[in-house]
Image (tube, rainbow, N blue to C red; front, side):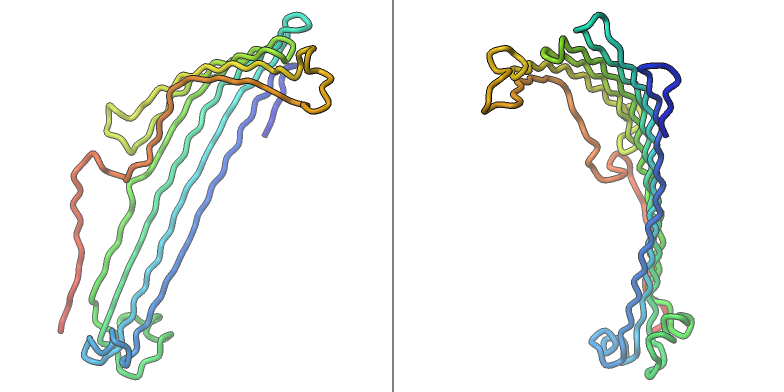
Length: 220
């Protein structure tokens, strides 16, 4: 969604929401190895997984000129992202020997509970705030300065934010007189940049102790 309240100013917002489902059902008859290992009786298992995520981005961009050759633009923005996954798993054994797969998977109570787990992942959330100022002289000499502040729940409280400044410059040689009408070169630019970068590509909950409970077994 774009909105231009005044000349040169563009306000934009965009959002996305996603829900992903996956189901996996397995049946092991009495003649399979799994069935043979369980008193020659069938085994059935059900797995389901749901992943939900959303992203929301807002930006404000303002472009203007000072004179005929001086071009400016400024950008401010924010972005938030959330992802969380829920999983359930159930495995039962000792079904009636001649039961069919569909009946077993739709009537898990006909078997004896063996394994059961349920999990809800730690929410993975990020928030970013950023700004950039661009200047160019006659689209020939360019300079830009950027600042980002990124926060992630994958890090411990007190260490969740990182700050990443950068600056870049460029020279468009193809707009110079000595290359402007060159038949072999249509666009040639020299660019240099320096800045800081980071990422949160680590597993969840690395900064704290976790305890889990599993149920495995049952009669027999």
